Length: 614
Image 1 (cartoon, rainbow, N blue to C red):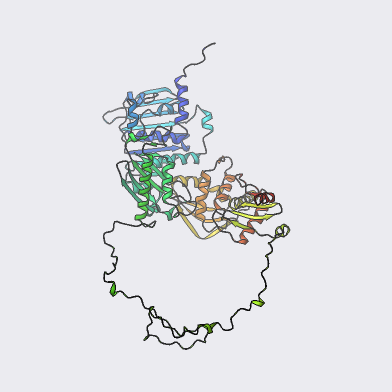
Image 2 (cartoon, one colour):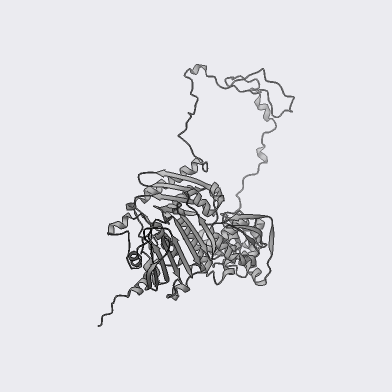
């Protein structure tokens, strides 16, 4: 049999490796910006065209590279940080020159201009599909200038599966947010198609958070500062009253590296139990400083999941730090045992002979069956609990004259008949009840129907919105007092991209500049008093939608809007509201399933009840 195993050519191996390292344009931005930080840059400029499809340009003022290093940076496994395997567990930097450049060069056109500070000339390299087309000296500024053009031009299958420009831009913004928050001392700018999204100057952590998420978040931040022999924890958490319906202001950083950690997130959420509004998320920006030898950053290709050696101990420290911060700022009830002043507690006297029982004032001649007489003054008479003589105690029986029962008139007890319910009578009554503020129970001919109230309302709203879209009957209810709200850059970009579709549904929302928006009107079918919460919930549902947003934008928005504005679980319904919900549900074309295909109702047969009670 002929040999069938062979080595792959380098350009094919690089393309395969690019599939692991470079998932989308945001992956390129992340790798190159982190490389710029490792090069000592204090200013980084990011220019994007068409959400990174056409151009990704990263300009930094770092140390630059020599002509040899610039060429070697595009070779596979090239690095400036690792010499032995043990070095992997002592890395404090983000990446290293050459970690992803070989993969980027394999699926794009790359132009590199770089120059060291002590050199007169820099180096220019042009690579296309792993092939070096040009390498020559060039006059350029100090630092490094990368231009990545036509991403995935030679891998059309990968380019085809990129999301819409707003979706891809949102991922780029998220990566810039994470890097900017973990490196507040570095100036970072982001421009898309010539428009500025971020212009962040070097500052401290708090001001960097405010510059990214808006001035309104400043009053929401509660500082954290805990230092132990295991880990140092700093940063900020948000006040419960400012929690949002959207999940997007939750950040963990370890040694200036962004990470995802569901276990630590659970520790924080437990601290907020019973003090958060329903279906809302608190903000937090938490920074861990720990010995690199105690963590493993190489358990995930994107290095966003990190394994801690002392995970349980850090969990306890984190939770204690968050609880302490909430207690200090009177967010949750707490007992402070470290008080400057002493609490004076009166001590009993040793001379118990001087202690007297409390005196009680009473009227011994009071008769509740007599006609009230003018009030008497007892100011001069005192009767204590030690008194045993009562003037009227001897004739108390006279109070009950005429009240003796006549036992001859009392009928003999009879056995109580069991209560019987006729199913025919039950079926003629429209009597539904709410159970656990989540389900509606209603009797039907075949048994008991159970209805999920939130999914039922989602179906009702969804079909109304679809009808509005099909008939072009846009009915917008104007707000008496227009409301202004502010979003982070990622959510603002997403909302801007779907504003035309929201307008078709009856929303009147206008961009107010600097990631601010104003709501002038809402769809008449919603009847909501809190449009901002609806918008926040809509964005959260829209971001988590698995539907191809690019193909079915309006239908996706209708589904997300129905989920965002439906009656939440835990909401008590009046009997009239229950009846109206049932009527509207069975007037729908598809009353059995929610817009996302989940079951709305189920009937428990009468036979099952009979089996239970046997």
